Image (cartoon, rainbow, N blue to C red; front, side, top):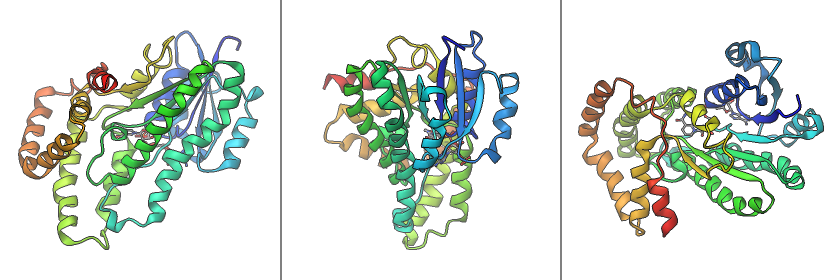
Length: 326
Ligand SMILES: NC(=O)c1ccc[n+]([C@@H]2O[C@H](COP(=O)([O-])OP(=O)(O)OC[C@H]3O[C@@H](n4cnc5c(N)ncnc54)[C@H](OP(=O)(O)O)[C@@H]3O)[C@@H](O)[C@H]2O)c1
């Protein structure tokens, strides 16, 4: 339909990608045609069901594996004039655990998906967007793209890499009137978390010493589960921030978009002390000294907030403003 924007989203079989696809396809003004992609169409049922009437109208499905050149090319060849107005890079995988027990090959898979997968997509749409002097590229990064988190070393590194890549490219793209935006969610309750916990339970952590395995399984993991349960947002919260006036619909979308205001102070901490000591020690303290206390306070918070924190999606930019002043 003329005037409708073509939005291509990666990783729509579950979680954030699925909810973004549905929310945009169900836009009351029908401003978007969503091409919801996934690497395995056998996993389409949840999306199709959630899309309801929009399926086949404002939402169509396509196969796309971000790790595969041929698959990406084929998907674009199937799009009319290969025209995409908004590309949302959402597909991503997590990885937690002591690095001693993770083979390099597995680490590479994380970079293949979270880093090179995004670049592969951007390379495919960029020439056309530059030529047209318009377009919007959105990357789902993470708070862990701004602040490293213990035992998430490789995942955080892949998101940091993405942040650096985007920060560099955004400047050039602006010259061509192409916008680049990052979405930085904190914990989100999706299959991501479930997959992680299931994997960890089975992990023997070969190669890691008993102390490290203890810190991972008995200190880090319970506090991580607490954090997900207490501070975790829903995929809908993230979709709302992304499709909100601030990002997709904005005339001048922001470059960085933290979705959870509770993480703003953490980012601020990092930029408040350029030696890095403040954040390293704060995290050390939180995990190893305040661990049990944190468990209690998280439990209290869970009851006190009754979920109202979860629905808050206001974005605050205190930390990032501090950063840009430096
Ligand atoms: N959940 C969180 O706490 C959280 C926090 C911050 C940022 N994020 C980011 O949010 C994004 C979405 O994650 P989510 O939480 O919605 O997790 P999810 O429910 O596990 O969804 C991830 C999606 O990515 C897809 N995917 C994985 N590898 C792919 C590939 N090679 N090609 C195409 N698709 C692929 C998965 O497809 P399959 O079904 O085929 O596996 C799935 O649809 C990720 O980039 C993640 O890093 C998540």
